[in-house]
Figure 1 (cartoon, rainbow, N blue to C red):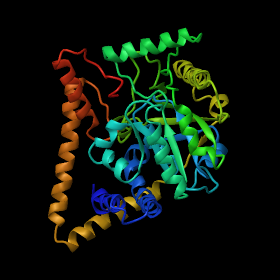
Figure 2: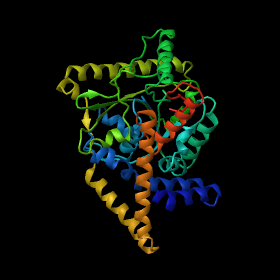
Figure 3: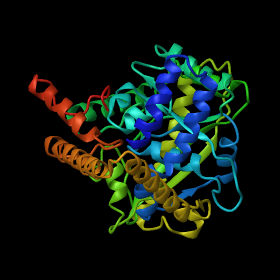
Length: 400
């Protein structure tokens, strides 16, 4: 909130008033993002003891060297945090690499979420879609053009599945509809992923068209205590990792994150994106099925399986220094304006609001949906209102 108020909001207003050009706005906000990113992921991904692995370091480094497009499965609510982590890192394993800005194509509701949602809107300039890639094509093209015209490279992530499903009636109905769609398209029903949205997806190819940047398939597996968390969509044992799931690693069992990358060779004039995307999601489904089989058999840690991965450096010392520097700046600013007491009161109020909102949401919906702070409470209240109006309880895909 400190950085959003002191830096993000003024810069956003100056840009909207056309006092500063788009290129300067993006340069300044890239600096702000690099300053704040380790503050965001330090507790959930570093201090929690999580280990992050990747199967193709060379391809990951390439995605960080120029504009790139990454299409990920959506088995968790913290895919965005994994993306921010790999984009920020200057050293993945041993060799140094580029630090690059990371952006996301995400549901429009996120921009209204307090703090991080506002930050993603005002500072990160993400792409927020209301309807579909096809109908929101002008928004997508305009956002990509903003970055290209300013020569500001970006890793752009999206999850073609579009939603995360919980266990409510609407969620299960959506899973059933996706499985039926597979059958209609002559595929075995997907057990671990939803079917991808493909209409208008070629609009996103503008992200890499001029620079010939890579388009990469991303499949992420989350494992804790030898168990695959994002297991079968129909399994009662499935856990949807969110911020609180990762934070449980502090004093508990950490979540290890395994990133599978594969280059996607997509023709710019591809005529049948549906078939192409379905084939890609068939591969993702098979990867997660293999993880499920190996974790169930206790063989996920075997050398023949783990040899494909490299463990990424979590840069613990660097993150700690960022935390100290960030705290020092806030305290110095508060002292300069004589508001140190107010700063600590604000911290206490924010802690109470975030924890209280999450607790209320958990009580209402019996689950945590915290991809960003306040989301569990806000979405649970929305779902409770749906139920009060007589609609079936469960996450509406348009909300999730």
